[in-house]
Image 1 (cartoon, each protein chain N blue to C red):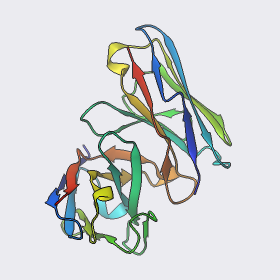
Image 2 (image 1 turned 180 degrees about the horizontal axis):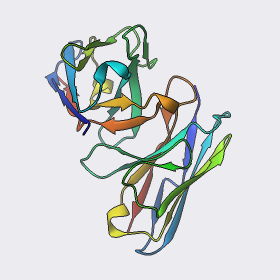
Image 3 (image 1 turned 30 degrees about the vertical axis):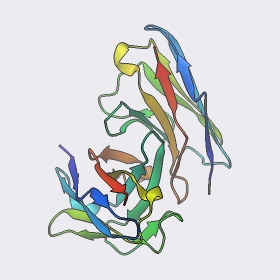
Length: 106
Length: 119
């Protein structure tokens, strides 16, 4: 199975900050890397797919980058509604695997 | 718009069985594969199972292989997850998720149904 390692596991930030979350795959996954946002008590929501493409309706302050094994999710100008947990996920092969999540706190 | 609604969760004793359902609407259901993903309380996301758009193949996480079965009924726009030999480790919120086809990410999720395995 492909292991997905996210860092940090949590971070504290303020409104307006630039936040970067990294995700490393245990083997190359090309660009098959996706990011989800989950708020407490809610289902996950797709943010970024295929490394850098924003899902419809996702604000442009979110961006993704990377390739191969190393990927990044950046939030440029953190907003109050962005405080949540973020997960990366690979779809290169089955089983689909997720990172352990990054909790973004105030 | 895409809408996924899970049902069938509840409390079940260890060793018991349960079947979850996911009702889909807002898209051409028979053209898309579907997944089940679960999340234990306070934990991260774990992919559970996938069924192809045509029902021709299904795939499972090792943790559930041989105990869970995913199926679909295109006449009802539903997918199902039959779960047997349940243990406390299966306690989780279970989400159904639509496959995107291209690059196979989870583009829409249901709200989840909670399964608690406890005596």
